Amino acid sequence: MMKPSLRALEVTPLRPVHHNDTLTTHSVTFDTFLGTVCLLCFVVGVPGNLATLRHFLTLKRKDIPCILYILISFNDLLTTFTVLANAVSFYSDRAPRTLR
Image 1 (tube, one colour):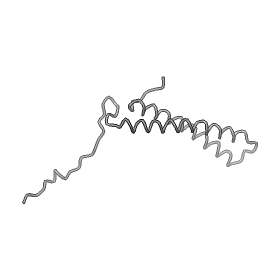
Image 2: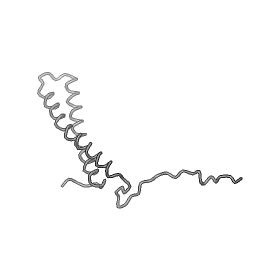
Image 3: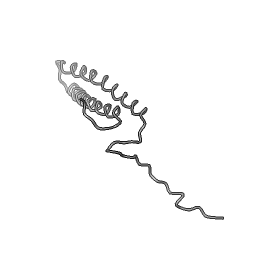
Image 4: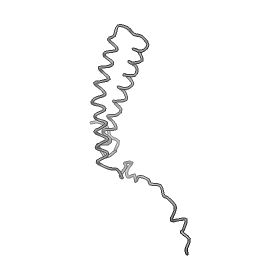
C-alpha cells in the first residue's frame, strides 16, 4: 500500500488576479448589488443627516447631548459622502475613477 504524498495535502491560498491594477476575478452581479446598497445609503443618509443637523443647530439650548448629536450627525454626513466613491468604483468594474 502506497503512502499519500504530503504534496497532495498542501493547500494553496487563493489570490485574486490583478490586471492593470484592477481586480479581474469579481462577480458583476455582486458588484452591482454592492453599488446599489452604497447608492441607497448615500440617498437616504445625506438628507437624513442634513435634517438632523438642521434640527439640532436650531435648538436654543446647547447642552452636552445636543452638541454630541451635532458632532455625530456631521461625522455621519462625511461618512455618507465617502460611500459615493465606493458606489462609482463598484459600477465601473472596481477601477478607481473620478466623477465627471
